[in-house]
Structures are given as structure tokens and as C-alpha cells.
Image 1 (cartoon, protein in one colour):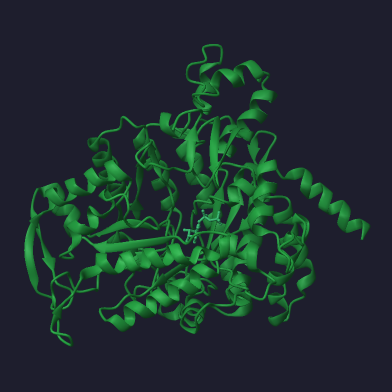
Image 2 (tube, protein in one colour):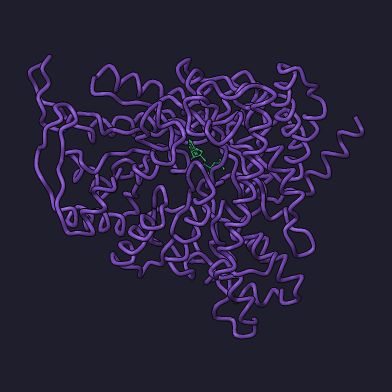
Length: 576
Ligand code: ADP
């Protein structure tokens, strides 16, 4: 009707050209002939309706909830992860982005996992695996009297299968592969990506322990243990292994580290199991067969007249938690085990995007004390409001079934969700919301994006907005900075402004890690962050970053040196 059309046109005016293109390419429903069959406003309505409907199961009216859900999405203040936007209210109905699957030391388990992965990828989710339980290469295989081929050879199969599935054209699958640092095949794992043809669809993380990190700092050695027999195979110098990790990360961007002991210390469900892996981008540590659905608040839209709008942030947080909790019930799980485990703990991950854009609107540089303090203040607030809302939902609808076995039971009377917060990369969501991704600084003020083979040059929307507002926008300036994407060589721009618009590669590497740690303090899942380094960065820079991340109690760390992969998603100006 008329009302609907009017709403649609206001939504269309909020969307950027890129956001609109992305929605059209991958999110809007299509009819049998492949023609686009909904408008962006109708997408948000479809999602809001499907997720709000859950309220009626608990004896509440879904109508007001639906309008609230619709409104925060249509205003681009909150967006759920891509699978929810794509699949809510459809027959597929798989709504989660994050999964972890077990891989036990038998062919049966390995190939079940492979099949499970294919179903998850097909539905738009990403998968994480620990391969630490597989017997090492050369170990005896009793049933065939042969020898085992080891974790790496099996990972190659998962990688190939991922290529083949390609998720029905919407997105190619993404995986995390973890191997414990004390696995006998660890060196082969660390160096896997030195071969450029290997494991394209995997992020690799070495699962390190406190014992290992301690041995690195003491220049001691540590044992490699065969997971099948529990016997020590040999001892290695921790420093040598760490050096190999750093060298390969410097060269290829992989591996990162997962700090397994910190992850498990902070996991409220440690009575139930030990976490060995995260989802593909590292922001959600999960037990085998758990899944998690994510959503992100657009912080750039939480600013009013140059200050943080705390009231709005509070309401958006509460609605976001409500939304994500409903997703758990609305979800159609790809496997019965996943549905069962997920409903047992009801983990959700409400996070943020547009953090750097918010800082720019507040006039605060990312790389300064005030930037870090703002991060802590904002995330602490979101955490407190999320927990409050989850407690309320627990009182109204019941706590998650394992609540009384969780560490949360001593602090809270009830709780609906074992975890509530996370910081996702928001790779696609931030394009739809037209803001900076996750908690990353602006990558460049102008850049060319490689989208499915086409190169587009763009001016960062927040930069453009503020440049216009403060009267220094000119097409001449934009041309000047087109090739560098940076303001640092523009003498006519005030120093403070230049600092506010310092880009990822201009920000001290240390500062990236401190920002990640600031968020991690108040996040019960984990924080996705890439420490972006300039091409000239050294192996020693990587050492400093990886060590600092451990010291500051991050749950993991990944760094990437500009230009170290042949094909990268983001490129500055004309280079690359
Ligand atoms: P989005 O912006 O599309 O919602 P994010 O970039 O925030 O997604 O990533 C969140 C999580 O979604 C990842 O950690 C991963 O688990 C999953 N994911 C992201 N991209 C893919 C992909 N291409 N294939 C499968 N899963 C993905």
C-alpha cells in the first residue's frame, strides 16, 4: 500500500549505492526465474516478522516487537549477521554465522565433519575446527596396518570441498583451522601457507597455552605430545617455534594465535567442556556443535549533537539482545546435534560496527588515550545493558538449560544466554550500513574495492561527511589524496583533523592491539580485529604484537602486512 511504499523510499534514501548493490546481489529474495523479488524495506520487514513471531510462543504479543525490530534495521542502527538477513522467513531458515564442529581421530568422524561442513556452508554459515585430536603423520593405523597421513592432509580435503560448494553463489565458505602448539605436526601446520596453493578457504590459528608462552619468554623448551597415545614425541625450543610462527605470519598473514587458556578461563561453561576452536574470524569461541548468531549495533548512529546518545544506545542494546535471543528459537538448524547444543547454552553475540566512524563524529582520534577510554566506556555500557536484558529474559522465559552448571549462576539470579557480546568483522554488514567495519580504523580515506572482479574507487562516507561539515571538502583535495588514501601529506589540513583521520596503516601497531584488548575486557566472547601493518613492517613488529596481545589478555591475535597476499580485498588508491 501507500504507507509501505513511502517507508521503502525513506529506506532507499538511507542506503548508499554500494549498500544497495550488495543487497541486490546477495540478500534480496529472488523468484524462480532469478529476478529480484523484494525491496530492501521488504527484506527488513520479512526478517522482523520472522524473528518477532517467536514472542507469541512465550505468551507475548509480537506486534510491537516486530515494529521495534523493523525500525532498528531500517534505520541501519542494528543489523543481524548475513545468514539472518538472507534466510529469515524463508524455507531454508538457517540464521547463524558461526559454527564449530568436532573432528575426532577416526575416518568416520572426519568425514562426518566434512559432510556437516558442506551443509553449513550451503546455508551461509562459517565453520571452525580443531584438528588437534588427529594422530600425527606417520602414526600407525591399526585397521589397515598403514600409516596416518596427519591433520594437514585432511585439512586439504576440507579446503577443496569448500571450493566446490561455493554456497550457491552467495558466498564462498570460510573456515578456521586450529592446531595445538604441542601437536607433533605443528611445524607443517605453521608453514602450510608458504605454499600459495594451500588452504585458501582457511584462516589458521596455532592454539597456544600459557605453558608455551611462558617457555617462549624463558627461552625454555616444551613437549610435543601424540594425541592418540598421550606420549611425548620430542621436545622443541619454544623460541624456535615462535620464530617460525612470526616468520610465516609476516610472509603470508597466517597463522594467528589463539590463547586457549585465557579463552577457557573466561568461558562460563567450563564445567561442560573445553573450547578448542573458534569460528572463522575468531570472534566466537565455541564448544563442538555449538552455533552462535551475531548482530551489530552501528555506533556511528549513536551520536547526537557531537556526543554519545546513551539512551539510544541502551534501547538499541536491549532490542538487539531480544532480537538475537529470538533468533535461537526461530532458527532452522542444519543438524539436530547443533540445534540441541545451541539451545542448551543459548549463546548470542551482540557487537558493534562503525566504531571508528563514531570516534570521527565525536572528534576523537583512534590512536590516543581518549580513543581507548571511549572504547572501554562504550563496550562496558553495552555489556551491562546486555546482561541486564538477558537476566530479564531469563526471568520471563527461563534461563538457558545449563545455567546452574555455569559460572554465571553465582552472579545472577537468572540468565537467558551463556554469552551475550562479541565483536564481529562485519565485512558485509558495514557496507550495508555504510560505515566502518567492526572496531577497525578507517582503512583509507579513498580506496578502490575489488568486488567480484570489478574495481570501484570510493571516498570514505564518514570522511566525506565531516570534510563537508568542516568546510575542507574540495574535489581538488579528493583528487590529491586519491592515490594515497591519506591526509598525512596535506599541509593545509589542521593537525587534529589529520589525526582523527589517521588510517589503519598509519596507526601504531601497538595501538591496534590495545584497542582490541580494551574491547575484550568487556566482551564475554572474543573480538575480531586485524592488526593491519604497512608493507615495510618487520618480523620483530609481529613479535611485539603477538606478545603484547598475550600480555593484555586478548583471546587471540591476527596481523596482516599490506601486500603480503597476491589478491586482497582492500586496496589503497592505484596501488596493488
Ligand atoms: P557479515 O558482515 O556478513 O554478517 P562478518 O564479516 O561479520 O559477516 O563475519 C562474521 C562471521 O560470519 C565470520 O566469523 C564467519 O563465522 C561468518 N562468515 C563470514 N563470511 C563468511 C563466508 N564467506 N562464508 C561463511 N561464513 C562466513
